[in-house]
Image (tube, rainbow, N blue to C red; front, side, top):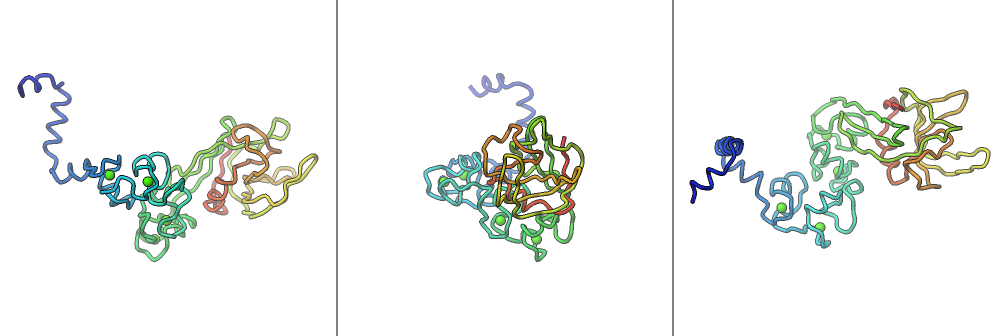
Length: 254
Ligand SMILES: [Ca+2]
Ligand SMILES: [Ca+2]
Ligand SMILES: [Ca+2]
Ligand SMILES: [Ca+2]
């Protein structure tokens, strides 16, 4: 019986089995064990998500931990709390970005250098390496795709649809930087009036007109050109991008 099964195993699987046999049993056990069968390994639960490895639904909201994590929901905070909108350790860095940047979502100062994880990211320093180790921030806008991506140290934090300029009021192309952060602005012109517009990142001035990436509360048509030349972002996303961006952060618009 055993011999028959072995004969059916392809050569590549034989080799894989050989190398797996060389691994210490403890390592195999750690990486594979999922005691509560919720889709997250015990190690992921203990070291990354800080969920209960023996309870499939740590926050008791009816969805198991693995389902929630895969869908971008927090397995710790119940209901429809998203990983991007909760901050388990109150260090100003949301749980979603902590997982991406491999910091500890339950330790406010992962690298133990005296600065909160969120403070380090806001200032452009690596929160996982002690001291002042700089990481590159950049914002990329594709007008063709009507999409914005921003990254920290090469790690993409978010990608989402935007609304750039309409054909008669195009968004400038080029390599820019964040020149000013303006919390609230009043946009107005012929046929439009948008007071109290939040989270405005100025990136260039052309013929006396200042151009911004900013929140837009007056439409939900992201993914299609809509603006008078600025880059419109939905409010729920713009607050995080505004927090992330610093004066001098690169803005590439193509
Ligand atoms: Ca588990
Ligand atoms: Ca749950
Ligand atoms: Ca945090
Ligand atoms: Ca730190």
